[in-house]
Length: 305
Image (cartoon, helix red, strand yellow):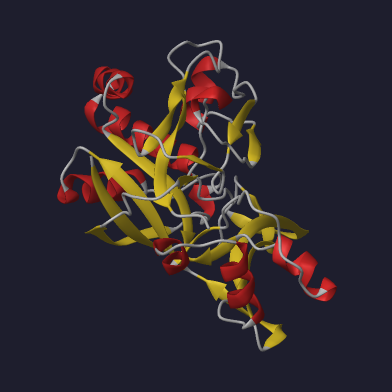
């Protein structure tokens, strides 16, 4: 399959984190709306053989998730140890060459990259009288959303909003087809509350990407549903999804909730595999058997030392 790297710009606040399985849900919904339910069934069926399109989580531009390394952490100043463990991302170029705890610690202590974290923010909103289309006085309320920020290594009191993100894609499609699909999937917003301004995302570019092909380990770039035995040498981050259907399907089926799903998350690592992806399409996540969740994601090779 071909590798691509997409650059996205987030304009404003997200209600839902930009993760691989939710992004795939938008792609699937776009196919259903534009081509019909039969086209969507055909699209999903292809994942039993060769996945037509796999996407990673969205990572701050130029960064990859902090990998779960096998080695022991070398001695470090206790005042910095807790901050080291909180690192969520490292510069992408660090995984393009042999990398281990010592290399990460050296770069971290030399303040070669900022601390990046997701922060919750409140947006103050006002209730609207739908009959008169006027603001109802005195009915202000706060609604929580998410932004990403990076902290200045030289001055921890200073933070800067991150608005550009990278998504790593694997696909049998051409670059133009992948870009068209991402544009279509994100055309009307992403995630919850898109109708009131959340999840306003623009696809800036999609470019070919030369992913590393050799190494001794692989890092998961998205959420994966897989038996641990099929991921040898697994060091994992685990996340739980408690998904909900979109409003149209929720109204039709009278049940908006999917079953909870446990997934290996981005940053998990394993030994080298034959394919640069892992996981499966997750079925039986809802009483309606048409509903599925995505549990496949790209894996990238790297050398751990």
